[in-house]
Structures are given as C-alpha cells and as structure tokens.
Length: 62
Image 1: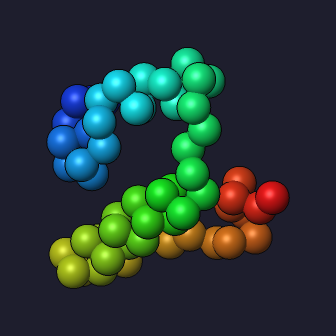
Image 2: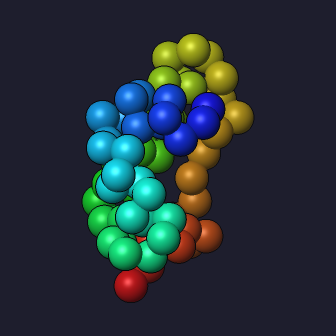
C-alpha cells in the first residue's frame, strides 16, 4: 500500500503522515497501537494467523 492508500485506509490526513516522516510531528503511541490492532483483527477475520505483535519487541516503550 502506498502512502495515499494508507492515509485513506486509516483516515489519517496525508499532510500528517508527511510531517511524521519529515520529523516535524511525532506519531502518537496510541495511534500506532490502534493501527497494529486493526491489522491483527483484519488478519484474524481473514483466517491469516501469521501476524502477531510481541509487546517486548515493540518500539512503543517509553
């Protein structure tokens, strides 16, 4: 998925994603967790159990 598709899919403004990438804004931890959760749920619904997230390996720790 490209950046535009990502923005449309998750309902995030395109400019916001550009700002994250340029380091002008920081991606909130809760939003990253929400994106991961949505991806896990969609994979579970499709019966694709290969996607999991291990909190110990996550970069969300402060």
